[in-house]
Figure 1 (cartoon, rainbow, N blue to C red):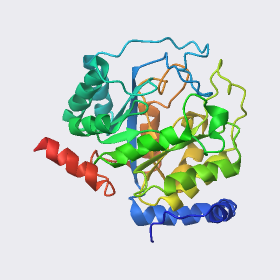
Figure 2 (figure 1 turned 135 degrees about the vertical axis):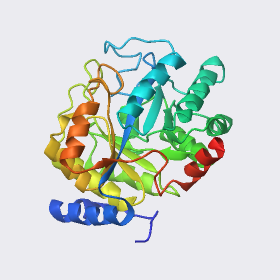
Figure 3 (figure 1 turned 90 degrees about the vertical axis):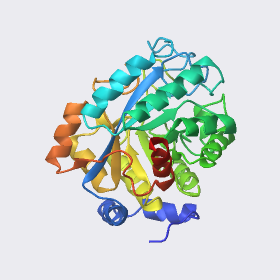
Length: 338
């Protein structure tokens, strides 16, 4: 199968409108051509700096502009981060994602402490991802030098719908950060959120944007909106499960080598619905030792629940640094270990 970066919107609309079982069958075939269908990559998200974000993302529990019950905390101590990462590793997690509620990375003590966290968790033999907001070229290279495996920066939605969701930054700001990451050996993690009131065309345009990046993002998270009380999107209706499956399948077909992540909102799906998403090409999930994913406003399946689900499906956990489609980051990790 030839990797493409030139999908037209018309092609995506035709693909998305395929009979669901035909679409899943096609996506499953693509998935098996590029990935081990019995392997699941499991990540743990650690909020190292929670709350107090100045941005107005309409879905976010951590925005200082909304009353969501999420307090603004100081940057977490590195020792605590290591403790959480060690427990995650013991539960079979291969990647730790460090998230900070920042609009953008600022040079100084806090960023230096995050760089130290990256080094320490990498030393545990785990992949490390960061989501810290916008960053510049020098900061991207500092993260690369610290051993960061992946940087997450979602586009969230289509460029047309974006201003409906966020006014404190532009779509171009998002794309600029993705470009900075692509100038390093770090892998790129970028996806979006569905269920915010966007149209099907908005969803497909978001995937079209991601598929136009060369090379494709190594990780593509598909998040289901978590309706957080106090945010402008608290009253959005739940998505039909079929919408989720279609998004997973189309993402898999467009970006065959990428890990397609079924991320926030997965707890809303039944085990059977999750299994259908895995069949359609989702091969990465977030799991947690508690009932929360990032803050107490967003729930997550537990390690134990996910272990039971994967065992029932005959699936195994993917080891860290074992993706055949992330050679640059694998080389980076080998260089750091030498």
